Length: 420
Image 1: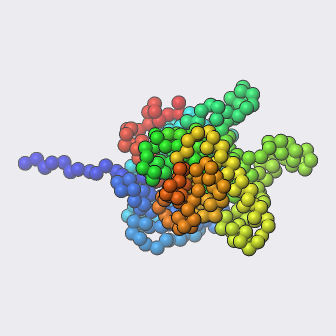
Image 2: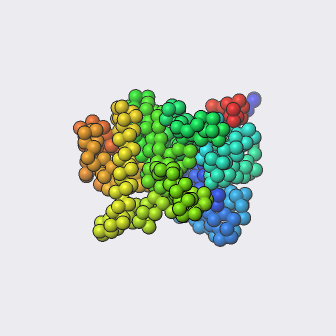
Image 3: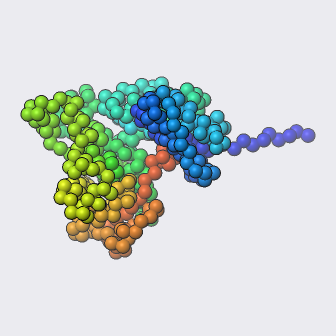
């Protein structure tokens, strides 16, 4: 009698990696039920006093902390793999379907989740001049994971991808076309993984199909961006060539007259690098009042601090300008959606952002707005013409979703997986 072959379940786990220059954040997600099995961070890589913080979510155990030296990303990923193995979740598991990587900049060629091959890596590296702080670290993370599991699909998911649907009249800057094209100067947008996830979940919250929904999505964290989403696709976004443009942020100025750069060079003798440091690291809320944590700023506002009040008012003024501008871009808006750390947790920001916009159909219900919660929820009055919503973002799950969908639909790298 012939014994029937045993059935091996298809792998359903995705390890999501977000590699920075000196850190690696990670989550292990089982796509069979979207459950988190583990999460953590390796930080201060290459700085001597490194650390790993690991949460064994599948067992409900306490967070484990490790301190020592992680000389490079290879050592960091080896330490992460060791922590996962201690929970029976080793990276050699046949249940692992893919490793999904957050990559900040994909340019005009990499606009979909992509199985990484040599051509893809070269294209990510080619974009380093427009993402010098992020793409090199993203490449390092991918190469490190490839060495650890060369047999496993490595999937790149790009922050810029969601915004690649912008029409040319929104993506182009009004500068000489030949110069712009030669140096890849245009609006790319960032936080796209968050905007994609949140806009889809917001449509579900409204009980509408994404193809029938127009949204203004406000991703408000230390970095902040707005997007105008028409029928599930990005129509416009506030960040541009770099993440500096747009809203007032924790340490970034957002929109500013570009001639300020030349002015500071002439009258203050500041170099290009010094101005870059000023606008990216010493501006925004931090530059205005010395703090970039909205909780601290609100505490100081309530205590009567004039500098904090001005910083808050400038932040809200810029936010309202973008709400109005994107309302005009879309023509019809079904909802304004708040997400990320400030957007999800700072009720005063949400209230102030829509105050006085009743003629546009916007308002918040005070009680609903003040009530906390981890779930997507409406905070506008029941009869509001334009809904106001809070939708917690989940970039790691979105990366896992996109990675898993790609590797289960495709056998691996091929023409659709290359850089094009």
